[in-house]
Amino acid sequence: MLDRFAAEAAADPREICGLLLGRDDVIHDALALPNVAPEPARGFAISPADQFAAARFARAAGLAVVGCYHSHPSGNLSPSAADLAEAAQDGFYWLIIDGARRRLWISRAGGQIAGRFDPVELQIIEAPAFRESSPWNLQAHLQPAGASANRRRGTSQAPRQGPSPQ
Image (cartoon, rainbow, N blue to C red):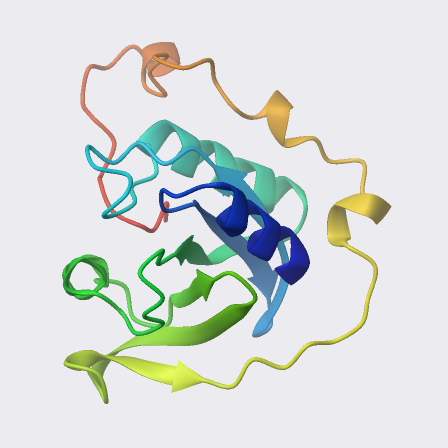
């Protein structure tokens, strides 16, 4: 998974992004998702529809969305001002990548970084990738670009914005 992130980040000058799936403080998998930020070279955003689809996918697989990952093409592995502004959910992991370098953070009130983030030791456990041993298919949960997650429910209310689909 980390090698995949490094390759994605090296191939794209914009910020890459996705969501981390796991349970019991273990990240089992990650879903690469399109960066829909207005300025993807300077920040990242994941569409609400993709966030909800990822949450449904994770739930069906017995996992939860436990965090996000994104690259900092500048090379700084610390949370940016934009990351600080978006870190509303305590206990949400943030994996920041620059090529082969990476740093894991957890959002927490009173954290060491601007009162919002604490560093977390990233321990790598050798295991087969979750999706390699799973029948789950994210594409079955994603909607076509431009489709509203609420259209099927018959409401025009927009989904909540932010890094957490929960």
